[in-house]
Image (cartoon, one colour):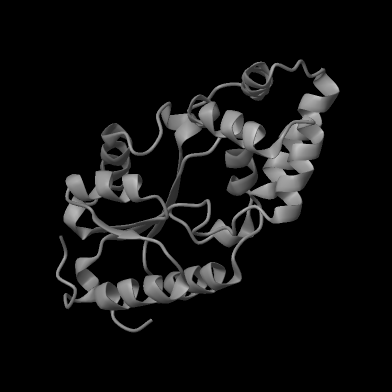
Length: 210
């Protein structure tokens, strides 16, 4: 792991997760909209939503993902409802956190090499490739393209290989502890995101003031 007092030049790249790191969590309004569209009790809907999410993030077609969610709920949804659910779900993840956007701008202006590593289905990946907030990123890695999701070690190895950066000189920021621990086991200098203030301290320790 990188020394916290090491010079900024020792950092080869900073890799960010997207959901709830660069983006804000889906709002209560967005969650309620999905629950209404599904016409299902909230607890049951979200249990089904997350249970089927890994295959969706790994590249499963949207129509099949929502069919599986419906099956868990004992429901059958026509194509029109599936389309509305898919659109509402995508929209719920597209609110960028202002503090994160500001941090990314400052890092890019400093010349820090940035990359994204996100568990994301094809629809979200497509939207993010055109998102202005990610224009300063050198590389975007999505689980739907990799065919596997964090915390699979193969995902991190692929990212390191494509970036060409040593694990110990690569910073990684993610809000899920299991993803952070998996990265650390490979020697990556990983930070468990819990808010902008702690992220600022982590990055300043590695990069110096920015």
